[in-house]
Length: 111
Image 1 (cartoon, one colour):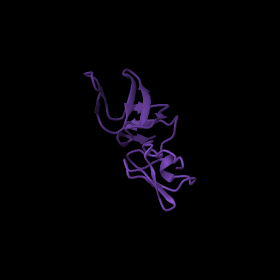
Image 2 (cartoon, helix red, strand yellow):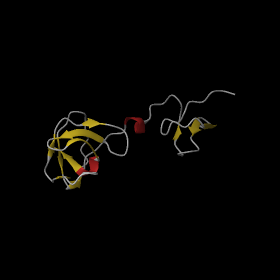
Image 3 (spheres, one colour):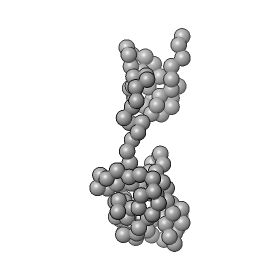
Image 4 (cartoon, one colour):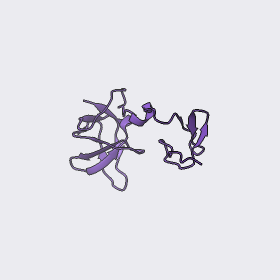
């Protein structure tokens, strides 16, 4: 039996062949081995649909409560030098007066 690669979406080792495609039974992702997937290079976009990149400056568009604290990130707060990450929260950053945070890209707009 040949060794199949893990799913590029969820890293499940249980992928199986279906003709020329491979299918993941856990997440339902389908791909052709050896092809570059568009979803692998998923672009992170702000609330207006602009593509974000590492080092960009963004502005918060909604008051955001800081979990585990009584402080709030106010509308219009400028966040400099963002870093894009994978996961539920797309952006790692440092906000003056609050510290290190993770933000969702849907609550920011590119400056």
